[in-house]
Amino acid sequence: MKVCAVIPVYNHGEAVGAVVKAVRGHGLPCVLVDDGSEPGCAAVLDGLAREDSEHVAVVRLPQNEGKGGAMMAGLRSALERGYSHALQIDADGQHNANDIPRFLALAKAQPDTLVCGTPVYDESVPKGRLYGRYATHIWVWINTLSFAIRDSMCGFRVYPLKPTVALIDSVRIGKRMDFDVEVLVRLFWRGMHILNQPTQVRYPTDGISHFDVLWDNVRISGMHARLFFGMLGRLPVLLWRKVAK
Image 1 (cartoon, one colour):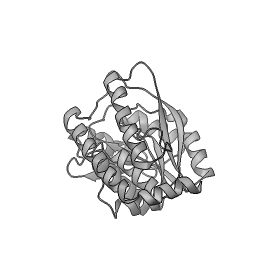
Image 2 (tube, helix red, strand yellow):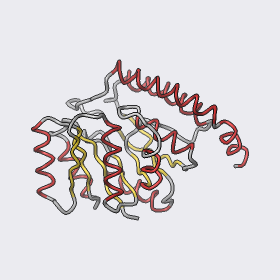
Image 3 (cartoon, one colour):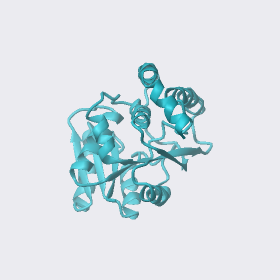
Image 4 (tube, helix red, strand yellow):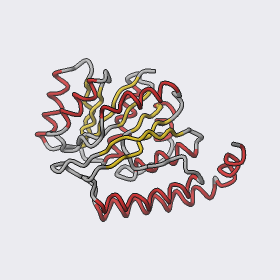
C-alpha cells in the first residue's frame, strides 16, 4: 500500500503549513491542490513544495472549482504518481492529524475499503452546521438503504484510488461541497465497504469557511434528489445486498 495525502486548498495560506507539517510528521507525502487561491496563498504552497520537493507537490487549478473539483484533480494526480490510496484532510486544521495512524492501520488491514471519519465535535462547532448535518444523514441512509455510512460530510478519509478515480472519470459528481456526500454514496452503490473511524473535529475561531449557506445547501438538496432517483433504479440490487448479508 502506497499512500499520500491530498489536501484541497483555497486561501488557507495561514493554516495549511501546520497541516502539511502534521501530515508529514506521519510520513505521508502531500499533494496540495491550489483551487484558484489568491497570490499570497499560492506563494505559501509553492514555498512548501520548495522546502520539501521530494514529498510535497502542488497541483494548480487556474480558477476556483470548489472542494469537489479540487479533490478530483488531486485524486487523479495521486493515482498518476503511483499511489494506491489517498488520505483526504482539510487545509484549515479542523481535522485531528494525530488520528492519521488509526486511519492508515484500518486501510492497510482492509485495502479495498474506504475509511471515513465520524466526527466527534467539541463546543466550537457551529450549532446550525451540526443540526443541518442530520438532514443529510437521513437522506444518505435512504439513498443507500443502509446505516453503513455514519457521517458522509466529514472530509477526513482514506480512498482506495483505482476504484475512486474510475468512478469520478465515469460519472458526473458535484464539484463543490456536495462532493464528499455524493462520492461516498456512489462508491457504496458500486459495492465498496465503508469503515467508520471516530475522530475529533474542531472549528478554529479564526478559521475560514467556504461553505455558502444558500447555494451549497441548494446544491446538496439537488444532489439528494438525483441520488434518490438513482437509488430507485438500483433498488433491487440494494435490497438483495441486505438480504444476502
